[in-house]
Length: 301
Image (cartoon, rainbow, N blue to C red; front, side, top):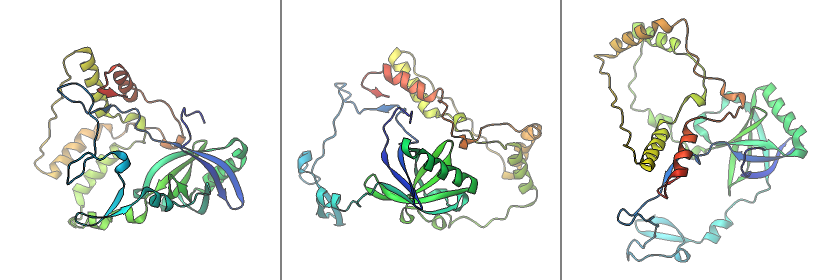
């Protein structure tokens, strides 16, 4: 696969009695972000992290460190790295599909990390049959295997010419929405207020295109680093004017009036995110790389 990177995992995908060789590649990466080292102000040297004993305050070298589980305040059970390694499930390198489900059946709050799933040269026919069959049937697949030293549940969906595999959070890892919303007041919005809200929504309808959403923080960091390198005045932050409407209904009326002219020609803000396209993003990553490549050890790309 022409991603310019190594596969994160290689193995097989199995559905029924059919198997195909596959590889997983990271679909989302933070490598283009600007990162900073911690520097000693007095010397300009990079600061190294040192682990110290919480009681004696003596430095503890790596070979003297181990793992521990706290059973009560300040009391730990020592767990050796070898004991941790022994608990890792044995891997058979197979993504075995357990069920096919409607694409809308899974709550995306369970989504963890996305990976591109590509076929091995020898398994392209079986891979394509699975991809096209899932697309025609409008289903996703649930599979399980050992990934990155843990048993993982994976959601697999058609994506462009291939498949996308998203690792899923376990149920115990997802916090209860009922608890999150338990203090929400029970309000029923109706009449003019509801009509105005619906009108505003209708005039702002569009489609999703991630390329239109820039990381303004990353761009600002790139501008800051570039200014520091070139010895220029630092960019000033623009002051944000916060509106203070008298009440919600007045704010809705004001918004509806401002958007009325656009009601017959809603803006197109995106292209379909599921086309599988991989067009390069302009601006953010390029600015970060350009700035960090010129920078001293204080900034790394």
